[in-house]
Length: 277
Ligand SMILES: Nc1ncnc2c1ncn2[C@@H]1O[C@H](COP(=O)(O)OP(=O)(O)O)[C@@H](O)[C@H]1O
Ligand SMILES: [Mg+2]
Image 1 (cartoon, protein in one colour):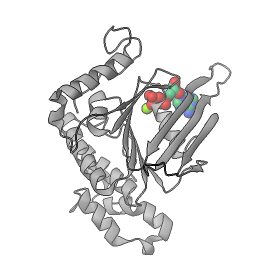
Image 2 (cartoon, helix red, strand yellow):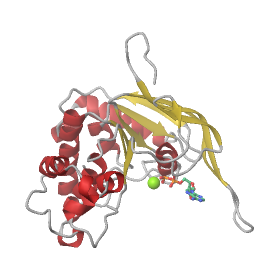
Image 3 (cartoon, helix red, strand yellow):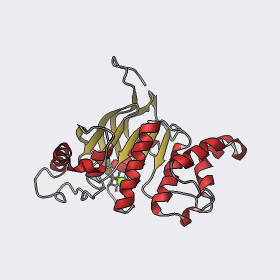
Image 4 (cartoon, protein in one colour):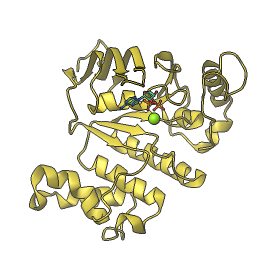
């Protein structure tokens, strides 16, 4: 972490990073990421879009410390990432909850791990339960909840440890359109309130533009940065902004990067279709 002249703090630094998954006898090696440079500032909401299989999840896993880079360095607050840490919470596409634990115990899990069951700060858990609108469901188990609520439990569990950085890998990808819109609204309200630094991977261009301060558009594999697009929409954001001419213009820009030959959004780059958030 260092301060520039205007006191902007860089929280995540990706410097010359590449990631190669070695092959086996019958399988060639895969270059998932090639010489990637990125800087993400404190409290920024950064979205990542790119063709399917281009290396978005790999990038998130590298920052999370689940994987190590084959080349280059990733730093968080100026310290080289060598493994997972409590400063970085991860939310996956499928909420990875413990089915035998209640909603409360799922949320409190990280705190119990850190401080022991008796050391859990119950008011912190209660606060996040309220923020996430889960009151009344504390004693339910995950399978008794809808997909949207399960994902809220997963986000609550990630947030209860007050991580500085929230890493989200297509967290709303498995939800129906209405629930997804609700969750986006919810996440934005939460972000305004808590202000974590967010790295949010999605294949949905509209979602990326509605949520982010910046949209990183990746090339097909190996992932490199095709465009670092500042999103010029005022906050607070609202779904109706998809009709704003500035939004349409930026969406066109992203689509053109993802299909430079103009053969339609599903052409060469392999971009997945944008869905309505
Ligand atoms: N653990 C792994 N071992 C081997 N190859 C992998 C592994 N993880 C990802 N890959 C490969 O790396 C490429 C990028 O994958 P991924 O990051 O999941 O893409 P995205 O999330 O953009 O769809 C893909 O070709 C994928 O098959
Ligand atoms: Mg992925």
